Length: 485
Image 1 (spheres, rainbow, N blue to C red):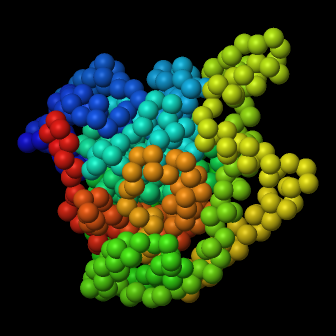
Image 2: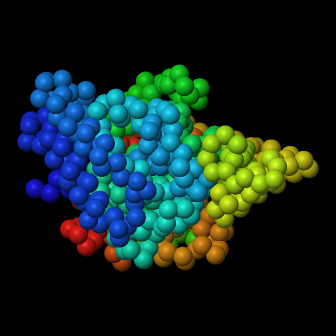
Image 3: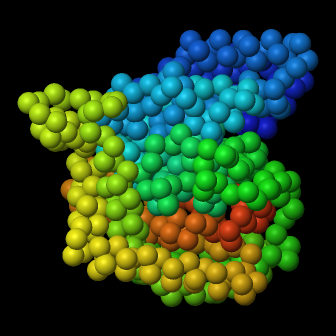
């Protein structure tokens, strides 16, 4: 039995019946990381010693008949944007290279309180700004299905770790598609829940009105299980929602009979590769065969979502990243005075993509341009959200769309053309702008590369997404890596 091929559900069952121990599971994953991560570079740091200590403690609790939860002793990877007490949290940036938080993010703390084991912190685009995980200060992460391709971003390390069986699941964040696009590129399930469904406390912010934590997993049931663990109202985050946590795992068994699923025509326009559209249509046919009703719908303001997103996200990034000044924590490049120290620290500490977005954001927030750009974008945001509201008010349970215009592309292919890279977010950013949940489910390989589909739900409609996602779920696709994949 290859432990690293097992799902979260199978690991939990093995721990419950005594056929597996947390120490054996954790050791298997640590050995797997040692065997293949040199090729992929999914991990920024591996917490081997502490993980084994925590696994032994989990085994002791089970031996005493007192596990913390059904997941006590199950390991997981965490995107390096979540604060982890006593473990470096770098945001893949030079400016935070040696930052060790004195507290845990709420999301990770809920997992730790359930007894889950931290395997390590995984790679990402610097400050979550990117679509390829090429902007990390700690090196490029590679797609396990083809090491010459990108894994997507910004949560590329999370997706690659799960795809390559270096973790059974991983935490990620999604600001404009940073869970869903890597899930599509790497052939894993990715859930970005409704804004407010999961606390943002302890997540280093990029764009506060758009950022949302979520899950990468090997199948829908695992993603649903972990979403139940990390969701809920948090007194430390005023934007977290008080709505009760749904029964997401149960939803995976309900089927789609009676559901009405919309195909928004704007997502099937020029720019989306024909083979991607064919995959989405095949998924729609599966849903129809399972007794769902498929309806064409329209979201007329979709074309404005991409420019609106990059104005909003960059403006919020400009504000959020002003705290990195070399004075309180992180990198400091000392110069002759405070202003020179700040300038030198930020010049050396931030990478090109982060600098680009800070400059865009500062520009659109500046005097004389605030009303023309930022305020106008807030109005566009309302129009985009109203499109979704109208569709869901008509009786649609969820929407089915492509995730991205193509499958994974080559490393370096778009680094010299930021606008071409930004276009890759065209199918995902409307979800963040509107605060809606989105689920990506893998479907098939196209020329050896994974291709998934995106399901978009109404606010707090995650249960409907898992109903539909589980209904079209396919057998897991596996990469071929040296070292046992």
